[in-house]
Image (cartoon, rainbow, N blue to C red; front, side):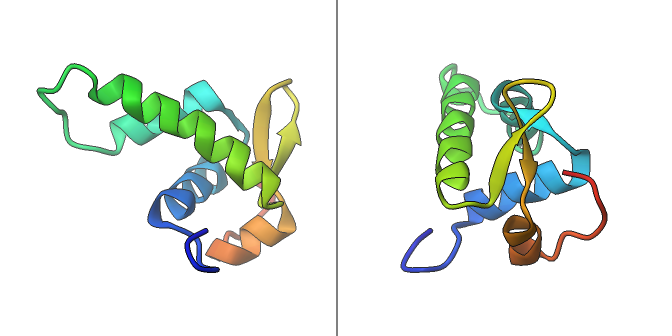
Length: 91
């Protein structure tokens, strides 16, 4: 969160988990990469993947996601769903 408000990256990660159900950090990283234009910078995809791991840790610490089956996957909490108005029982 930035000054009490979720960052755009946090909201995007929550939206991806909401839309696709439980994701592990690698799957989230892949979806974050796919959501962006391709870059000619060779370090682009690995940097986004590292951000995904940090995002999951931070979102978990803030109570927006929780660990789910299969192991090391993440799903939304009620608080996370409320933050981005995620309906349904997915993630």
